[in-house]
Image (cartoon, rainbow, N blue to C red; front, side, top):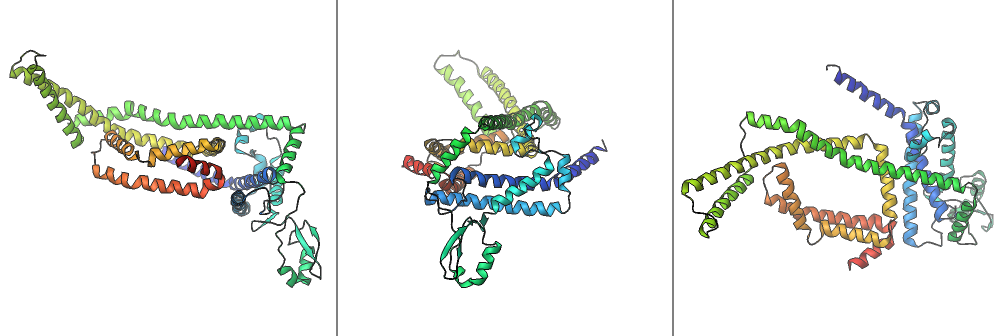
Amino acid sequence: MNTSPWNKFVKYLYSARQWYRETPERALEQAYDAALAIRAIEDEHFGGQPISDRAGDYGHSTLSYFKTELQKYLKVIETRMVEFNASRFFLELPERVAAKPKGGHLADNYLHGLGVNTKDQASLIFEKLEFIDGVTGKYINGKSTAIVPVVNEANVPVKYTNRSPNSKENNVSANSNNNSLDAVDTNFEEVNLLPRSLLGTLNRITKELDPEAEKEVVKNFRNSKVKTVISLRFILLLILIPLLTNQLCKNFIIGPIVDQVRVKNNAGIFINVDLEEEAFKELERFEQHLKFETLIGMAPQISSEEREKKIEEKAVELAEEYREESGGAIKNVFADLLSCAAFVWILLNNKKEIEILKSFMDDVIYGLSDSAKAFIIILFTDVFVGFHSPHGWEVILEGLSRHLGLPDNRQFIFLFIATFPVILDAVFKYWIFRYLNRSSPSAVATYKNMNE
């Protein structure tokens, strides 16, 4: 028993050391995922070209959303690469990664044992770094630099190149024509004869005609299946483990201890004044019921001694009932704390499952139609911040107070109802304006029309 805390401390140090040693590949993996996200946006929405304001197939709101996503992913890449380079200074990454395989994506980690990822991990690191450089090389300060005009001495554009403004040739031209280049906008993009949407369609058709397309579809289906299974299993764990912890601890651990302590200390029948008043009202109602039945002839006439005896039996029954309820409230407090601890423990020990669940929920939510999104928004707002929501909050708070054995504080309930739904409504409106309006403007328009 004396070595148990020391073993836990050593285990904690070992876990911290492992987390520190995995910092380089973790940072590289996150930067690589961000670069893949940028490449996916380019291929799907911009025909493989860099993300730019000059795309004529999209409106201002859509382009603003793509620019925000680009800035977010570029910031992630910049931060993670700094973390990667700083941690690599102290750790030998290639040797360590080659000794310890690791998949490229979260779902692929679960498929590694099935043979999905068989590349040499040391060479895979350099491939990822090269891919990240290829994606970020097209953007400087968040702007596309795919095409830059070359200016002659007469300040007339003579040709376009795919070089960056930092290339050697452009620097020579800039040294000889500083005044001319200062007035030239270098944020040019290649002009296509066909719309980007048509190019994207042709690109998709080409991929579908690829002989390897079927394998890619099967692989994506397997990854999606694994993601769905992992997410549903994790949701069940989040629900069942806290519930089982609550019931088992309450009935077999906390319950006997609380009952023994209350009997030993001769604890009171009522844990708060509200329960006492409720018991008195119930006993008074029973006495009036007996008298009423006797007056209307539904029950035979009884003497005062018999009436007092029945009232006494009812009082003993109520005392036993409310003593058990008071003890149950104490049990609920400790059982709920253990359930919360179990819930937090699941979250801390399943970080990969949390990310997979987040991705799964994003796919489900963003896969809904605009009308379905608007319906869910209206349902959520009406239930929690709508006109009838104060009654629901009042019932919830009263039930929670009784569950934990707390007295019914009406002032606290009214103050909570007057502040929390208002704050929740403000936060929800800000979320619609800040995020949903960019990701799905048509859903916001449908929500406004349905709400009117």
